[in-house]
Image 1 (spheres, helix red, strand yellow):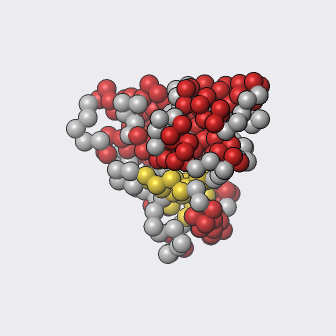
Image 2 (spheres, rainbow, N blue to C red; image 1 turned 30 degrees about the vertical axis):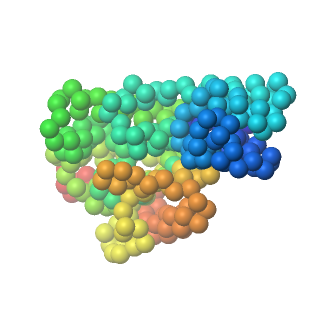
Image 3 (spheres, rainbow, N blue to C red; image 1 turned 90 degrees about the vertical axis):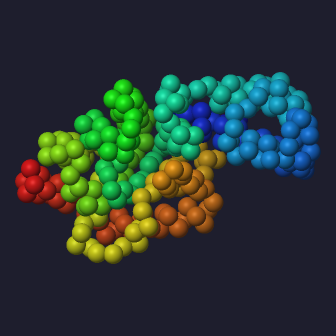
Length: 289
């Protein structure tokens, strides 16, 4: 029986439920095709379920448990209880009209993560943005949308940040390219407020910020921004998130995660120490604002 940490989001729970169903199927030596036939579906449907990429119907899970020989009432109840929690909408459900489907999964994983490491090139990471900075970023990238929708997008970003305030919230480690600190988003007052906000955040024990300075020149992550998420439950693999213009990549194969983890380690090694980060932030504030 799997134990869950407080705050585990439905995205993570779906992945765990899918993994449990996959193990039960493999233990019985049943093919995905035969399992799909049992629930009046296809092999691809079983694959999506086992990867946690779709919601689960109670009838389908009950039929699969029967096929897999899970007859014990307590064992079945544990799985069905997990099913109910996995199907509960996350807090971000009310923003679904704003969230593209490829980003909804990330918000759910972010909510469930125990550690988030991120490298950002153009902007301050979303979880560290002030409301004014977030509004300026969203307005610049959302031509043609009205003020009400911009306000809701800002509210969504602020809501996401609450994960860092939770007692069981994740450790957040950011490497930010110096260009993002100097790019004049929203004007002088907005940028000064944003940089001062970063100084305040660095006082929190669960937040570490490093800066990739201009002086270093070329480095191993010039391909762009990415995040690596780790989860408390050992059954959940680390996930690398790489956002693109109108889609995103979610990488969880060991060799892919290892490659990005190595890049992140090199970035951390050549970026500023936390003390140096304070110094560079203060220097930029004094020079430009």
